[in-house]
Image 1 (cartoon, rainbow, N blue to C red):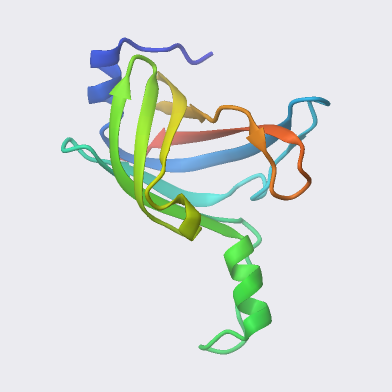
Image 2: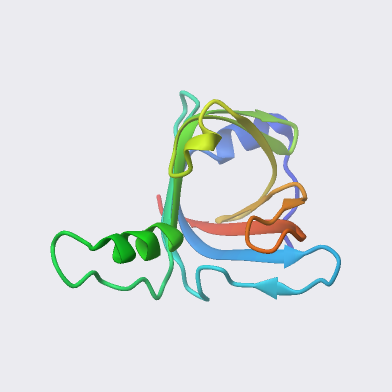
Length: 150
């Protein structure tokens, strides 16, 4: 079980490259959990000493577009099967505060997002606060896990 780390430990232990191992959305009311990007999503999170971050991930079953230039329908499906964002971050206790300056969803740019973070050995777990799903309007929490890649 991952344990929260002291603020100074989190600030140093989060730095590096992390490989995505899971992305799970849980409905608060029902406890129903879904692996939105499949059981083995692909992606990385990068955290620098200077306080920059970049996260990019795609679904494990992402379909390859048929031609070099995807059709509009293919673009929609490709967009729905990924997420990417970056900017500045800082740690506060067992939380990471993200200031977003680039994102796959334009409305995230200029926002601040605060997530709970736990580390244990080579594992990083990032948990969102409860928010409304854009898919079904339910209150959900997303837990993303990573393993240290370097």
